[in-house]
Length: 77
Image (cartoon, rainbow, N blue to C red; front, side, top):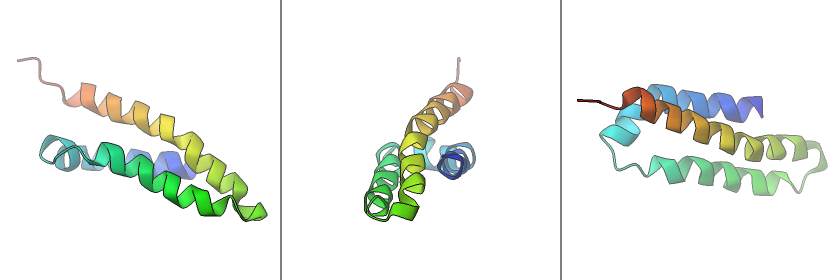
């Protein structure tokens, strides 16, 4: 979970402006989808199941970081 949350933090806090403000906002769909696509094959290996579960559990944490970044970059003018 920590690794997935750190990856989300890096993406949303450092790349938010380029990915969402000046981009199309597709990153909101792509980042969780990549986590799911990486987690599915990891569930087939007993030793890697905790990593897969951590990736899936980190998706809501990433969503909270995304919405926090939205509020931080929101212009009230």
